[in-house]
Image (tube, rainbow, N blue to C red; front, side, top):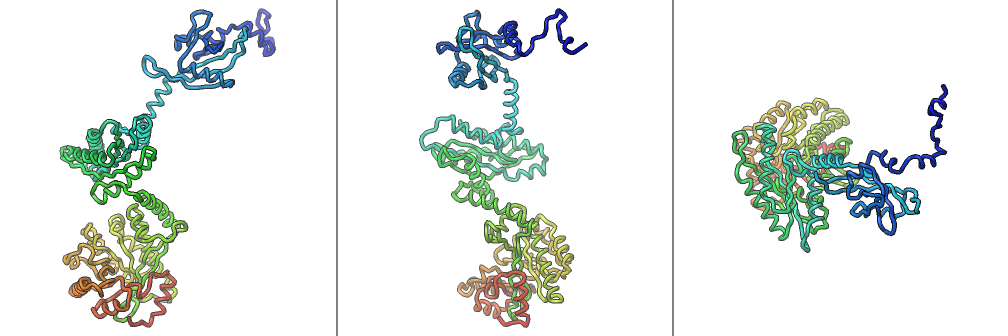
Length: 581
């Protein structure tokens, strides 16, 4: 049987072809077309400025009963959806879609509506096909997901994204007086990680929930509390009286945390760092104010006081972030160099060694001060890779100098150790590897540590220093006189050299008290059998006075500024026969 005959009706009637579409219009009634549509559908007409529903399907009648005609005369319609249909008619477009929201018996209802042109009726009246798809369930799911996306699952507070939306909503939909301001109060819970480590994450979660409840009690009407980080909270506050309103909220926060919190049978007192930023006006970007508050709370963590954002703090924070990013790249790509400042034997003029100093010149930032980028490295955790790079590079420099000289040079190199590096890294292993890779003897590599490194963790410092002595390394205490050393630590620790801080040396000729301090340190060192290095020697008079006082070694601009590897080698070779001070 052929396909054509298979498609024919047994009664002999041929199927309707595309060219016979006019026959379909006569065979199928308009009501049948509407009934075939699964979603809400209606035919509208627009005559004499009035919009009328002339025909609908059953689903439309159920969803829009007030717009459904009860007879053939049609029914005039009004409301929000009718206004949108009228806008479509006046626009002269062929088709348009829009979303309709209305209040239903079970809450908001949402419909995706579409309106399009139909051929004119027999009386010439323009006709339109209106369809509506119920998307209430999809919107409900979307709303639920959005709520989860914008809120913190633990405390049910807005998260960082939700906080921004809540602020925008308050600013846009609230009545504000002239010259109104808003403030952001950032709160960082202190020692939260210790609770997690000691009592477990469940106790940490319980602590956050309890703290969030207490913070809620500090809010006024219109304020917004959010959890914007692990142990970070923030409050959006409307300020009718400027800073005084913000400080009142801060006082309520401190009062709310004054009572201890019971966790796992323990009474825990929660401290926090608080930073505050106040907007210049309602047109200021809330995200900028939040960043300012976070910059202020960072300072508060160091100062232990409530900090109010000051102009320039955010720029400083942004610069630190830029420095951190570029420093990370510089460490990975070999963008740092070492400079070497000579150490001079004050009695003979002999160069006894060099202090290795990190230097950084960025193509965009230019020369970056070591004071600045080392502080950023300590804050960001980059101090360990920076310290390792400096140590390996210093020992490799000694190895290259030996190869150029044809044997071991009678000089060593001093490298500085950050207290944070000592706390976070296996420093003894680092020095052992650096010496082994370079083939340099340990006695030519001096570790310079600060007094604060010893005070921070005396037991760990003691173990480290004795491990370095096992490598035959000399140990120098840097910036002596500015920290908290005591005679007991100097006597019990394997320290070989005291470095007098330049703040005492630089002006000792004019300041009698500083000269007394220098003389006292020299006497103390002699009693303990230690060598002394004086920093900051910038004139011959200073060098001669320190020589007369019996100081062993000195460094400073009088002798030479820090120089690169090649210049440092040439400097040593030029003074090889020794010179007098």
